[in-house]
Image (cartoon, rainbow, N blue to C red):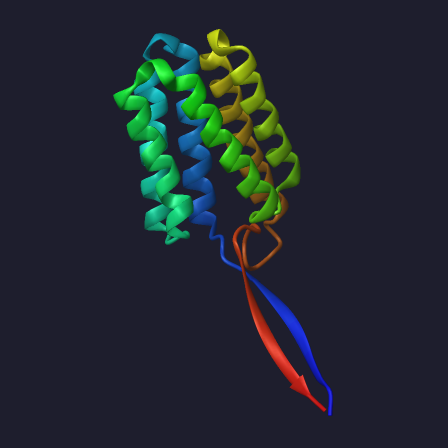
Length: 165
């Protein structure tokens, strides 16, 4: 008697989360371009809002708490913005690559993280570029996945179905 396992992937990324996340990123990117001198307030506020948004939509706690901790670090130590935001982007890029299966944006995120470390004086513009790119790409994905009744792909839950002979 053989037992076969099938993995059924169910998508859990509602349109509401995608739209809120995209609008938050676009608004923060625009504010960062307009007021680069207030970067620590804008970036810290964005990260706190992002973490709370992740908690509200019941994402895994590790993913939701990382932006909150990074936001508090930026508020506490504004001189460390390049390092803390680059660390956040590195983590976020890996999450995009592995969990969201959003490969192109994951690679761009990792590239921007490296650019921030290499060129910390341009951190405001690199953060704005990331936020605008991330927000616009989320909107594009939302429209691409409009025909999908489950909404855009995001975190996926694997359910094992056991079939016996």
